Length: 465
Image (cartoon, rainbow, N blue to C red; front, top):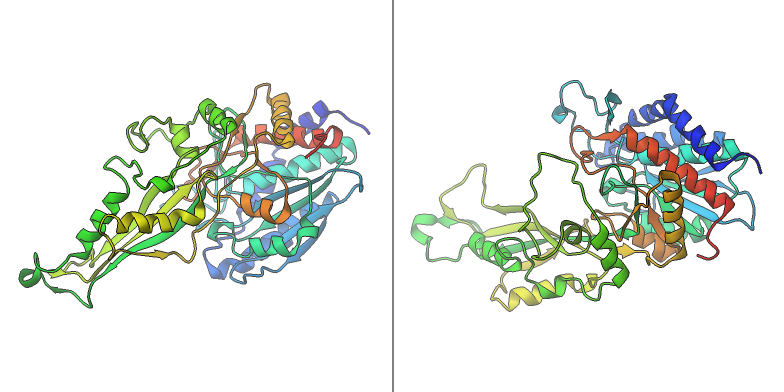
C-alpha cells in the first residue's frame, strides 16, 4: 500500500484547481439530457456511452449498459471495479438526466448547456443536479486510485437517466439485479446542504404522494344569472374542502397525517439542525405551518400539504356560468414516521366527516415516492460522520432525511443495505429553475470529503454494517 490520506486529498484539490474537473463537468453539461422530453432520450444514452463509460473505463471499471424495464426513459449504466472477495463493496448512485433547460428564462449571458463561471458560481443545467455531484464522486475515486495504486475496496456505480421524471423502471431494475448491485453500503451525492459552509450526512428522504381532489356535479356550465345561488358551485365546495385540510396558516388538520413515535435520535438531530435557504429574496414567515416547530423540524421532521394547481372553469377566458366541475392537484410530503398506506384513506375519512362526500380523491399516475431513513445508530453512519469530520475539521450536520425525493427506500428494500447521502450543493443553487449553478467552493470541499471517505473505506471500514 502506498501513498497517504493527506496526499490523496491534496491530489484531489490540485485536480480541481488545475481546471480538469471543470473541463469534465463542462463536457457533461453540454449533453442535453432532458428526460422530460422524449426526443432527448438519445442524448441520455450518449451521455452514458460516449462520456461516462469511457471515463470510468480509463480508471479500471468494467461498464455495462442496461435497458430500462419501464421503456419510457433512458437506460442504466452499471460500472464495477472488483479488487478482492474479502474487501467491502461500495455502491454509489447518480443521475445523468436533467430537467428542461428553459433557455428563454435564464439571465442574459447564461446558457444552460455551457458552464459560465462568475466568481464562486458555475452556471449550467445539471451543475448542481446531478452531473456535478456524481462527477465529484467519480473524480474522488480516481484520486484515491492514483495515490494508493488501488482503491482497497470494491466499488459499483449506478447512473440512471430518468430521475427527473420519477425514476421509472429503477425499482424493477434493482429488484431484478440484486446480485449485480450487491454491496455493503450505498453512499451517493444529491440535493443541497443545509448550510453552504457545513457538510451534511443525510440518512434518507421524505416521501411524496400526488393526487387530485375533484368535484364533478353536472355536464356543462349553466347561466349564472338564472342558476347562481341555486345550484351547487363545485369551486366553492372544493375551496371549502381544501380549507378543511389545513387552517388559514397552513397547520395540518388531518390528524392521521402527522408523524408519530419519532425516534429520540431523530428528534435530537432535528434539534441540532440549522438551515440556510440560500435565497435572500425568499422571506419565510415563522407562523406558517405547525406551531411550535423550528424551520428544520417543519421541513425535515413533519408532514406538509401543498396545492400545486386549482382549476375551475376557464381562467384565461371566463364565462358567466355556474361551472360543472373543479379540480385541484395536491401533494403531501411525509417522513418515515407516517403510514404512507393510510394517507389517502385518512383524507377520505376526514372529508366525509365534514360533509364533503362529493369531493373525489384521484391518485396521480406519477408523483408517488416512499419515505425512508437509515437508522442513525447504524455503524456506517458514525463511520461516515467521523471521516467527513477528519477531512473538514468540524462535525457534519446529521440530517435524518432530506426534504425532497430520493430513491433511498427502493435501494434499501431491494438491496438490503444502509443508504447515506453526502450532498455537494446548497439551498440557493436554483436547481429545476433558470440560472442553476454549483458553488465552486462547495464542490472543491466535496471532492476532498469524498476522497477522504474513499481513502478511509480502503483503510478502515466499519467493523460491521
